[in-house]
Image (tube, rainbow, N blue to C red; front, side, top):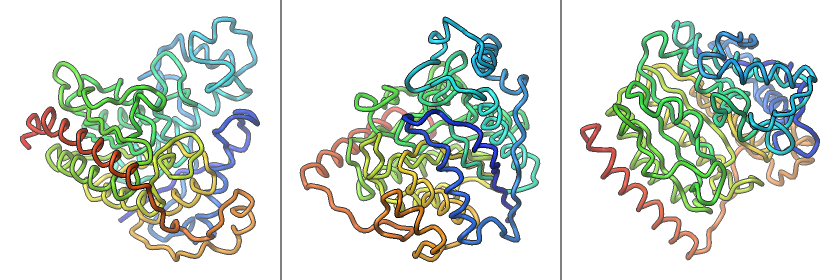
Length: 375
């Protein structure tokens, strides 16, 4: 099996600002942990530097007007109506080089998809990608250009049938929007329920429209859902639908903000639970494009995505984190210097509510969507 990881140190040039929760440092930290484990020089893997996506490639999903606005604000031009495009103080700040950062993120995911589509590798991982909230004409949720949509479009342009599975704590609304009426792309998102968390969507009755009915699948989850609740719900929904759909290629968004210590969300997965889901997903297509996504506890991001890259290469890593990263991870508050998390326990009432909520969502998916797929 041949693999590729897409990585660049150019991310050091970009900064959302000191108070913003999305820290570019998480990418460098992840790379250093991968390197400490020996994962940046695997014999079957190549390291590929991303090329910035062209305007034409980005315009396959985003409007030219919006692209022009991104370029203008990135260059320092005054755009008084930038807020109409989701830009300004808050989630989607304007900063120097914003457009170049968006091009780099989009280009890396497009390259990952091209490598897989053209048969150069079987699996590719672009952990700086997975910016799944951006809409055709506006930024949203820290995302300016939707690289996940562009990766899927790249695979579709090669005639491949694509399934997209998103395990970020936030609903993958931009990707769902892009393919809501398209039966050649199956989108599945597991996430914290939309009435408790941004972007306020991803309810179980969002099932697609027109010929796309049944090809948009949402599994919302109660706050504090942990591995023991998540995994049975995941197994009840995701594997049966992927088997029935039988994709040629799988795009997976591996946000780690569903982790129990993430500061922006309220789910309770562990690193090992996250990696079990990654391992399971890899079973369902011969070609895989893996993307990053959310994750705002930097130590968790590094551990999870390092573990994901090992899993993509069918490797099992030693539990003790290499000593070269101890100082950095301790500074970030990581107490147990291991790849996995120590056991965690939920209050019995909290667990019961999470179990009951997940069971209702699974039942609804089985009633509304499974028959469309012959299940």
